[in-house]
Image (cartoon, rainbow, N blue to C red; front, side, top):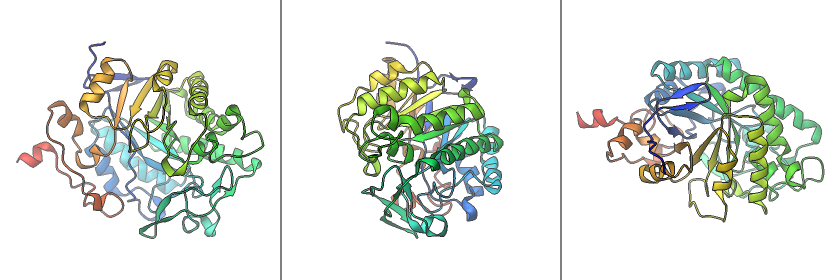
Amino acid sequence: MTNKTLFEPYNLGSLTLSNRIVMAPLTRNRAGPGFVPSDLAAEYYAQRASAGLLISEATQISQQGQGYQDSPGIYSQAQIDGWRKVTTAVHAKGGRIFVQLWHVGRVSHVDLQENGATPVAPSAIRAETKTFVNNAFVDVSDPRALEIDELPGIVNDFRRAAANAVAAGFDGVEVHGANGYLLDQFAKDGANVRADAYGGSIENRARLMLEVTAAVVEEIGAERTGIRLSPVSPANGVSTSDPQAQFEYIVDQLDALGIVYIHVVEGATGGPRDVAPFDFGSLRRRVKNTYIANNGYDLDLATSRLAEDKADLFAFGRPFIANPDLVERLETRAVLAAIDPATIYGGGAAGYTDYPTLAASRS
């Protein structure tokens, strides 16, 4: 047992975080024309800057990588400029912020792709899931399998997005390797039945994720690079037959790159923690730098897991939507405000920047 607390500073590489609480990525579908973060986004993230680390909503590295209506990108100059307003506002409040870099793969729809193109995937297997497009949740489109000579271009899209993130003022990036999106699809044999160098064995299925992460490290440095993984989450219809061996191998290779953190969804994303047998402690022991634990954490669970040294930082997701001052509320054990489900996705300020702080609600 240790005497650490959630509310003490923590050194994440060269960054000093004000506490051990992380705001997890939260898709809100409020980007403006050109998939540019709106001015409201700067206000939204700045309101939550008391978190030790903010991780932005998932942000596509290219139009091909987009899977949902009105999600932001980081591949155009206008998008870089829009994100710079966000990082400036967060830093003015003393916060730290990473951007989550995203390619959705097969979790997309032809209406979101350039010229109505077919979404891409490791294999031509349709995901049993829905996406948000044309202001409605609809079934995703049938994908096509990526050709092997297309994969270096995707690696370079991640590399370029990482450089753009630094240009936009982010403190670092989180590679999205979780939740049934492209890199997770390649890693898991329920979505990847390729017979080339990117399919079959554990090593081959991990190849694209590791190449992307290595390219990001080469571009911006290991101290600015993290990754998110979800070994057993069935999110977006993904599955694998060998999660323990697969993700122990992946984490060993990622750790050898020296990246600053590994962010792990423990269980089903947004669902039960015990969705499938898995030894998350094995991953924790393999990580030399920072292990961020995610999924279903509240104050008591995070406090007990920290005391047991089960993780270094703890990510909270949906509670941050309705509680911009979540850190203060946790520290004082105040009652948490409830989310309005109708305003989670899309819209304007309502349900986005108008949730009051504890102090404001008492005045």
